[in-house]
Length: 638
Ligand code: PLP
Image (cartoon, rainbow, N blue to C red):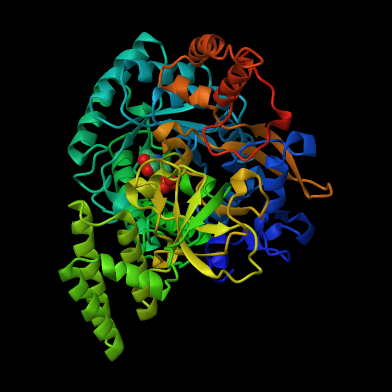
């Protein structure tokens, strides 16, 4: 496990068990040994055919652990409760979950349910997010906040006012100055007294990629001048008592508590100024930014890591607010945070399969073959070959590489001119590979082909070079013997993973036990897991090449023989589903093709029915490579 730094990024939820498989500890440190769940067993249960007792799901697969989600929420709450108690802070912590991090219905519903005992709420940044937050919070704690962020039009603001009418604890946070005019106007028309917040543009700047939203030139929030104008407008409308919350967000993955304390301290000053100006302030909302440790380095130097844990984060926030408020003799506000990444990242694991591995082939070459190669060379190429042989004889290995390269280039040119045959060119390639191998310069990194779309399932790797821990979920008691990069299914050269945590450009991997898993011809399967991707990845993923999302299972700890139970199963979108996303009509497409099958399949024994059945199955199956036999399938396009 040290090869993959699992103890660093995985604790306390992921470890390697006695069978050499990745194990999940759903309650973190409170997990007892018999409660550990073997990830490989889940994958088998999910992907085995129904006729063999499995769930018949196609990979890739997202495995969700709601117990981990619950543990994250409770740990965050405990960290703030402890900081508040130990520092004698005069109010409480009440967080919200920004639904944009993962809007999956069951993730949001779980958060509302698990967070209800401590009034945990939701944050929305668009109209559909607000609609989902409103309906989910109807089943939650009525004190939980519903924070409305993002750019707003009249419809968004009316919706937020309606939420307030429905007794949801809604706060409209002004992202732009103009929004206040709509809030004042619409709240009067709808006879609702709104609760208003403001997002402040702080001077404190987080310098990494995720900090581009912070600082004076940041995209979001109100400047000091704008804040003052909003206060005046509210005062004129006799609504200054409605202004109750101050919000800011200095960016995701805040690297250190020093930067955090700086930002919180600045915001606390603005908060105290708003109190002085007569607003009815109650809440400071410190936004998101609570980071997680993707590479296990616990360092503030890399965007992949942070140098603090939940306890240090909470202590720094409480201390910064308390110090400023005490100095200004202002009552301690409720502290709200909008942590997304830190809540949902750990609870879901993406499992995918390596289906084949390529390597740079080094052919063996007989003297006869070599003679054949030399005979076919043009005069200048033969000189290169002779120089190469002489350098080899003298033991000048670097020079060998130079001549080999020259020979190859010359032969490629000749091939392009039509003066060299394909067999000759292949022989030159082979000779150059032999030389590279002898000199020890052969690139030994293999390409593992994985049944996955990077664009759909790891979009942040493609888009912003974000790295996630990727680890085989089994055979971890065997030393990996090769190194590889991962190449996905899409017809796109960007569809690969060739950077890994720890600054590595390849991943230690095990030899596949027989290529050809997809042909069903046996050989062990090789499963890899991408961890810590529960935030943002599902929400951002697209349908490049029409690969849709993975299948999903929800897994709870249980006392059964496997120590787990699959409590929800959602097969990934079928080819028909993804076609529909692009406005195609799979049912009509199938009808057209079926008529064609009847017309052109007349010579078949079944008059084209078999063709129609295959077509139906293709619409119904997922777009990913399939190894499943169709023993359990039934056709619903017919
Ligand atoms: N709140 C706001 C306004 C955000 O823009 C974001 C994300 O960037 C978050 C909360 C969530 O941040 P994080 O996932 O870093 O906790």
